[in-house]
Image 1 (cartoon, rainbow, N blue to C red):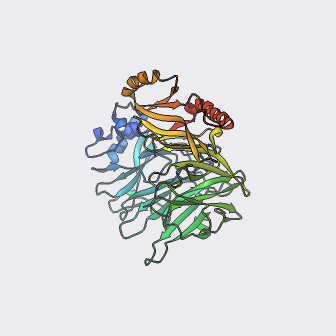
Image 2: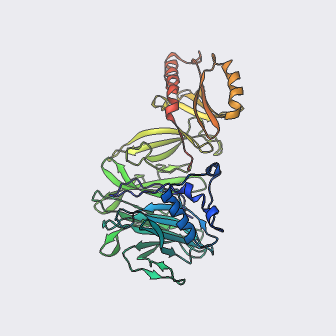
Image 3: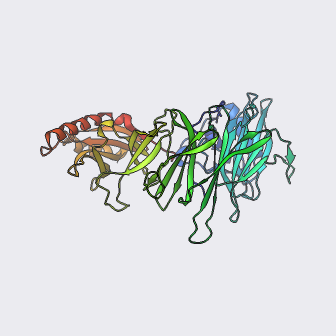
Length: 487
């Protein structure tokens, strides 16, 4: 099954908007018997207030959904976090509602509603009877006529591949077996991954489809094809095609966007084992994809290889995608995989032959945190788990590359809020030796950093100066700590 994919970074001519209907949908179980919605526990702590217009839509959805329905989200849709989207499909300035759900017989379905004379009414139902779920959903104006086309990635049955279907709201409306209005797909593709975006700077949106073929026999590698389509005439036309390296077991993600200050292209990442991954980057030149990264022979260079799962993204918000590289923290090179610590490094291609380090981060997925490493630390730090310390997360150390030695610099803690007052009292008694300060509070935890007041006397004079530069940078930790709760 395909993994999670990233948000589309390329900006089209028109922005799609999703209204915050999640709170409204929490009331659906109270409105209609048999209609369910699964929400996170935190969402249920208080009764939401619903604006009148949204309440009308909520009631209309409840009436229109079949009995025993279950609202659902596409597995790989990172653009929206709701089962109901408000989107202007036909460019008339009035939003339509797109609802994804499992029907009465556990079949995935999509329902569309229109707002006519301030009243929401069911418009269309889109179904794929042979599908087991919805993998991916995207609304894009391929032909630049102001009206959206709908792409739906249906999860195939156990003996058939996933199917990507393209629906146009300009095609003739038909009726299904139960007499409901529906649309027939304009195009249908077998696929493993799909993404939309602009490869060029001409405002034309392309569709990239990756299809993997299972190996036949123990000695055969899987094969993977990448095709790029765009709208020509009355449908999609393939404009370029290429075969991807077979050294990857399966491809997990791909994202289209700017890959340098002067280039657009695509980054594709796939797994090569239980934990390791390869990253590939291609630039769009003269209507074709040109390999950029890695630039050495695949089996003669470790460039592009990562010992853990990585996903490239626009990490600094400048509109350009950065390559994510997992680097072993200094001093852990000989450790087992389980005990290896990883520095998450993001580099940006300069459009020629060089790559600039944009940022390095420490990430703790259990607590959903990213800590950007201060620039003063780069090349002279390492970290390891903070063992035998209550609530300890990680110990950051000054690293002497010449002597392969580390010196404790700072430590990060995540302390339960109800335990913090008691623990802080003991810390205050030791603050002269180990100063500390609170970074942030999140999800019932207090995040605190404790740091060294001065370097150990055994460090050389030059190393002591470096050490104190790094200590001063700890003051910026509050602005360098980020929380992520949607991973």
